[in-house]
Length: 471
Image (cartoon, rainbow, N blue to C red; front, side, top):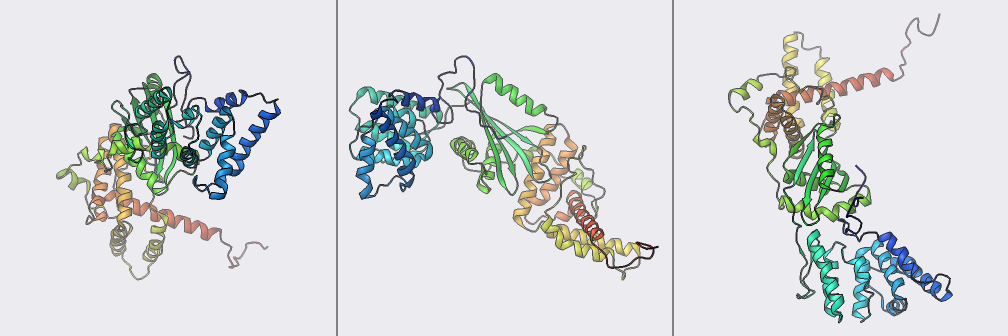
């Protein structure tokens, strides 16, 4: 999930604008612009070198585009003295390096009354950001060319279609940019079964009516680390159907359809918890983030698993039968919960107490020992889930897993996970009443105890054993 596909091949797609907000074929455009001048002409070569020096040396030192008095005139003069094609190339390079700083630099040129090359509109027009919207509105108001104003209004229309910020030309440039979501068909959501680390894959797919394309946003999220990876793909209708079917039929993943608003909220929540380490993936997500927040309207949707019937009366009493060690709980088939363990930092403080109880010589009768261990597990379950953040984390994980099982037709297993999540949803709920949560506590403790035992066996011993290492 590392690729970001923004452009494909096929009939009728050669001149289509890229849905990531950048003009199509930007790299080729740079070469075409520079080729307009004869590189063998020493005079032209001097302009090209001056442009490269401006972009690579002087532009990075601007403070968000604010020019110091002593540098302003020389820098602006250097830019204004370049030929039109070279100016356009320089603008493209600046925008790719730092869009906000480049827009501020162009604003300074407008303040000075400089004539910007009209080709720069193609480079800046479809960049996201309210500062870009204000700049375009102001450029429209200052231009005297009716043909250019018409071209700029076409760019504004494209921004509306793609859901980018827009300020209408008849409004003042100090007005707030208005973000208008693009018209889309009913979006779709997919979510996978969480693994032992709390990681799962989430997808939101929406069909863009104006462009007749499907935008597929896929994310790898983790309970504590946040948004680890994001993939954004621009697909045709046939490609999107094939892509969705491949996900649902993948034998290595357990994936079910889910409420797209919930999937969008889960991706955005993960991004707020932790951003992707890859800068390009982060930039791609920020470009399409408004589409996801528009689905959720800024509020957390009701979890789809809330519609699963858990057997409130007799079913609940039957499934919550007394099982102090959580040994009688029936887990989902296929070992789906095999690697589910509680956080190690929460289990370690309990391991010494557990070992002390098991090795105690004070209690002689096995029945007494069993009672003491049962009481310890009930207390350990309450202690492990005492933190509200931990309760919410595990509640969400259990509900996500329950919904996937429900989507795959495993109703009984889904109800058991829902019951465990219900004990965590209420701040006053008692986790020790859930056999599944008790099972997780016991399994996590057993794993830590086994690890400690293996570590002790590997440690060198100072005890000399007869017959070992001698005759």
